[in-house]
Image (cartoon, rainbow, N blue to C red; front, side, top):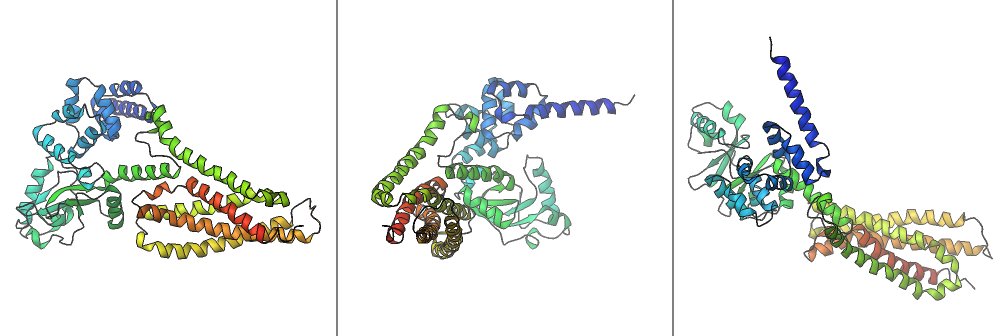
Length: 447
């Protein structure tokens, strides 16, 4: 009797078990995760374990009996093992490091010497290497030997000197296609894109984006190759950077852990600071209104358009700030481009202001329930509102585009120029502009 139907059923059952283990994983409690993890057969458990984030791997590993931890730690390549150790509490790090074999322990210890957000902390120290003077036949034999040594990728083969200096790179496809007796230095690519070991992960992600490469070698100041960073390593980095920027643009400090794993008090601490600053800033809006109380008493109708004025300035500033912050993150603009951005956004802001000003003028003129006497006051009120909108949208756009440059110049993260922060600042100054225009235009004709 054929065993194929039975084997297929077993495979389907294992796939179903793995899918169930993955289901709602981020929202599960630590106890529920352990239960699901232990319900899997070893092969599926390994697949799940390798696909988890370093934080989740650490959480699982530290709940496993100590005798079982060794096999799971040795399942990880050196760079992933280093990430897991860094994600664990400091008290557990030495014991986790000791679970590795001697070679891996040495490699991981070297990786831990780097900051986790640097190229050196992201790289894998294991990569295929050959010598320039080898023949293609010899190189292929040497690569085959290395292929059994847990290499993450054989897409690129790096050509190193005796001192581990990087001389060139050759793709595996080129190596297979070349004549067996040809020397490696005759087919290798010498014009290489490399990164230094202390390069920050944000800049590293831009290098990947611009180069289109799947792997980039990491070298020291003497061009000695230290490891390789693959595009797979950058996926979590890009997600982490984007998440951090989005959270900061929401007027809060970036969370250090997933949402459901962040404690109540940590959540409050991360959010209360900016909220308090914005709250205090908003109180200046009341101060601005109080300062112009006499003008409001002469023409109470001006208060009806305060929400429109505030919304126009805040929205335009938030738009400009968001665009500039994202362009900075992608490396599309730098500090020296500030004047180009200012020139461009000034015209954009003026154009948007004129368009919105026309809408504001028409809105006032078709305003139902006209009770002002004489009727020509509507024209002055409409002119006041439309002119204020033009100036406030222009001002909000300029503030929104320049504030990220100012923060970058001060060495701060431009993402902290969040939309709420820009909106709050423009709200206060926008009211001053509005009442100044009203004093110069509308109040001059009001009895």
